[in-house]
Image 1 (tube, rainbow, N blue to C red):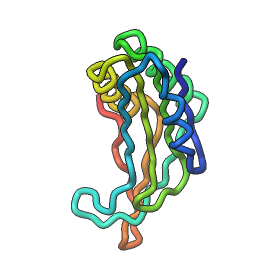
Image 2 (image 1 turned 180 degrees about the vertical axis):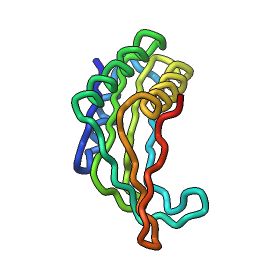
Image 3 (image 1 turned 90 degrees about the horizontal axis):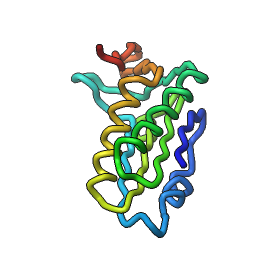
Image 4 (image 1 turned 180 degrees about the horizontal axis):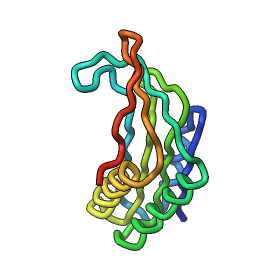
Length: 140
């Protein structure tokens, strides 16, 4: 089982973590991406995340299914926030459980990279000086 969630409010990460506690899974790995206070030398006050919801959900689910096919994992879950998030707020969380740590680490990294590359989420950074700027999220 795998779940991808787009959320416009904080998500209960403890509940997501509990979903990974399977008796056959001896290893688990998670990644938490938070809004940081600087980017490319500019002070950041927050980020406004926008997404094309239906496509984001579909792409996210495909990424989790691909990870399950390519890595020996038991479960994967991921969530990405939308809306305005201040510095320190969790924007993305990925969790994986597997029988062994190698698969968990590798699948978590893969999912993190694939979400960044393929899920249609855009970032409009808000800087401390009052200016905003779109951040390139996807590369070819």
